[in-house]
Each structure stands twice: as structure tokens, then as C-alpha cells.
Image 1 (cartoon, rainbow, N blue to C red):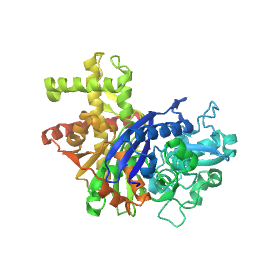
Image 2: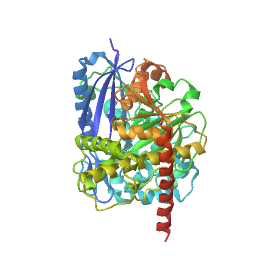
Image 3: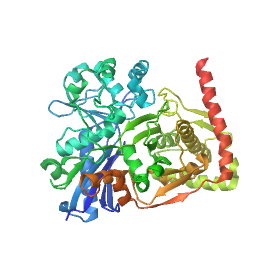
Image 4: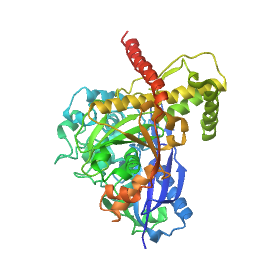
Length: 526
């Protein structure tokens, strides 16, 4: 009897697999690392074959831990970062690396090699840009493809497939070249609400008139939870499953997280619009759904049916959050390798110091966290980070003060995004938080106290995997829609309320934060 589901989430540094029952209970989870090559400047590359191997290892390990047989698995869901995979006409890897190494066929989502191309397209003011907040990010696929065509023309001529990473995974699993509505609307400027999703005039401005032919891109795309095929014989063998397993269209990882976090409210339209999902990891994303088409400068979207049928999705996000905390640890004289144990030691000491010093802890230190640009609400990939108030203190306690104030700054940035979202009509009573940040009690506390909102932490151990399991549930026929899958699979959660006294303290911090934005702009204008 096929009663179980497999979900895979491919992040920046690892592939993770979860085994779920149809009621949303996770039976087992496993992860396997993936390689990332850092090149010159802001280049970052993956090996998609390495990603697939890691996926297979993680699935096999999770299945073994669950004690299930392949014949008990009905559906499979993938989500991934918005990295760009390029293959030749035979489907073999095509290098995107300046080294020419054929292994590295994938431009990682955080790669910023295409900043100039993004700025060039933004200068056109094309109407399509209204559906990405008025400006493209170099993390999206059209600028990356423009860069690839200009800087690697011989490779361009040999191209046969362009994939968002989630679509590469479903292609590798089933052999179907079908693309997902989640990926195409969010990262490829595909207008899913139009009868003709690809805007020919826009592509001509980008110099990509031939990119659909070169990349094997179809006219239509698969909606959330739509089945695109069953596992191929080869993929089934590699994954330790069988060919009766149905594969759902892939999802952008943040949007899978949004579905998993908001699972319990998705069948109530009014409730959906009063709640936002906050997914924190290497980067952070605020994901919101609405029946209305709401546009806001610097907010990604609105994207039609990028994760939920008949709903528009808007994303406000930060490029480096967990990655910035890692950087702070590495750069400080008392830092070192930012592994889990090091982060925990810093967090534990911060609680002690805050108990001793109260609200004075870290005073005088102020941070603008734009060390990898500012996605939202400024849409400026060239923005730089700022630290004000440094002294000669190189002690461990000095590191703790800087780490704490960086945490505060990251959440002040989220508050900035929330205020911009409210300007276009959103009203959020509660944030549903997930991702690696829920394991950092400092950030969970700040989410509530800085934003002034209740914060719900789901009981499910991994909301991103749950979102992909929801898609697998629909594809396998367990649920009629993503909303119904959410209602059936929600595991409940706990709520942390805002502390009004601390909120007043952070209100002053927010004024300083906004002043730092103005001062940075003034310096840049001189």
C-alpha cells in the first residue's frame, strides 16, 4: 500500500531528504553535502552531477532510517535554490566556469556575475519588470543567461537545456523537460497569467530571442502539485525507489517553505492574507499570498500561482543573513570556523552578557547588514555593509557584542521589508518562521520584539521539506489541491508574542537603522 511521500530540498550547501506520512508526520530525514566552487569576484558554481549524487544518497539514507520499502512510496516532491543549470544538446554538463572545468555547469543563486546585465535590463523600464518589483536581480535567470551568451559564446552555441535547479531535478528524475510554474514565474520572467507567458519583446531587449530554442523551454509550465511523470528506471535505481513513484513539479525552496509554514491557514483566504512566512537560512525570505495583484518597488513579484492555485505571491528578501553571521564569526579575531558549536558558544555567552548588562549590551554598535547587496527593499545589489562603533576590542565578548548587534540589524532589515509590504496593502498579524534560524533563539526573540508581531514556530521539524511533501501529496492523488494538502498535513505550532517594552527599545534602533541608510546614501553621493 503506497501511503508515504518523499521530499527533497536542495540548498546552498547540502541536499536534504525527508520521508513523510500522508498526515504530514515526518518519519525520517537525512542530508548530504554538496560542493560549491567560489571563483573570482562574486562567482559561485555547482556541479549538478554532484547535486544529483547527494540527492540520491540523502534519499536512500532517509528511506533506510524510516524502515519503509520502495513499494510504500507514492509521491516525490523537489524544491531547490534558484540556481541555473546548463546542459548541452545531449543533456550532458556544459561548463559555466571561467576555468572551463566541465563539472561546473551550474551558476549558484548567490552568484552576482550578472550585475551589469541586470542593470542594463532595468534601464529599459520594460512593462514585464512590474512583475519583479520594477527591477531584475542578478540572482535571476535572464541576466545570468545574458552574461553567459556574451561571455561564453561558444558554450552558448552548444547549449541544449537551461534549467532552474528544481526543474533539473525533476528532469533527472523523470526524463520530462516540463518546467515548473514556480520557477519560471519567479526567476525567468514568465507571465503565467497571460495566454502567452513568454514576452517576445522583452526577450528581444535582452538579446535572448533564441534562448527558448537553445534551452529547450516549453510553451506551458506545470502548476503547483501537478504530476509531471513517474521515476525513470535509472533514477528509481539510483534513488532506491521504484518506477511507480509519481513526481510533482518542482518548487523554489523559499516557496516550499512558505507552503509548509502556512499549511494550516491555506484553505482560508482571509487568514492567508493576514499571515506571512519567514524562511531564514543562508538568506532570508518573507513570502506572502494574496488574491489581489499587488505591486511594490523592490519586492519580487507578484507571481501568479508560483506556489498556490489562484493566488499571487510576493517575496521580500535578504541575500545574506545566516551567511552574514558566518562571515562575522570568520572575520573577527576571536572567531574561527563558524560551525554549529561555535555559533552555540556565542549564543550562550550572549545570554549571560545580556543578563548582566541588560539593554546596554552592545550599545554603540550599529550595523547595516548589506554585505551582499540589498535585495529588498532597496533592490541594490551593489549596496555595501556598514559597521559603526567599532573599538580595538578583539576579545570573545567583543565578538559576542558584534554578533548580537548583527542579529538585531538583520531583523531590523526584515522590519523595513514588512513596512514596504504594508504600503501596498498587506496587513500581517503573524509571522510563521522556519528554516535554520528557528534554531537560533536570539533571532526568534527578535522576530517578535523588533517587528511587533506574533511569531509561530511550527512543530514539524522542517517546513521546507513539508512544502515539497505537500506537492508530492497532490501529485500522488492524496489531496485535491495544495491548500487541502496543507490542511491535512499541518502539525500545529507554538507562538511567541512580542514584548512591548523591548519593542520600544527596538523602535529607537529602527530610527538609527534608517538614519544609517540615509548617511550611506549621502556618502555615496559625495
